[in-house]
Length: 120
Image (cartoon, rainbow, N blue to C red; front, side, top):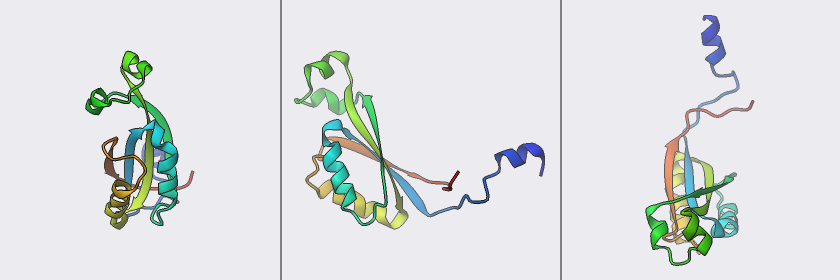
């Protein structure tokens, strides 16, 4: 193995898992209720919140936009990343859709594969 290949090779503690990353973008006002909902799901071992701002097609139709949001042209959102086992993704999405956490029509999601996970 040449020197460059050794530098980019995964560390020995990196392991491959059959998991997905569920990423949600929702209006910031549902952050606490969303956290409570995720805490209550046995499939969720942890999650990461990131405060983000953005603009999307649904923002123009939202009647609850503040004057600030209407003027600046983007809205505070929260991004949530959740690592889930493949077989749990559909069930977690179903729980989020049916929960009373205020996500109905106020968020979007995508799912990506995770190549590996490890400790630094």
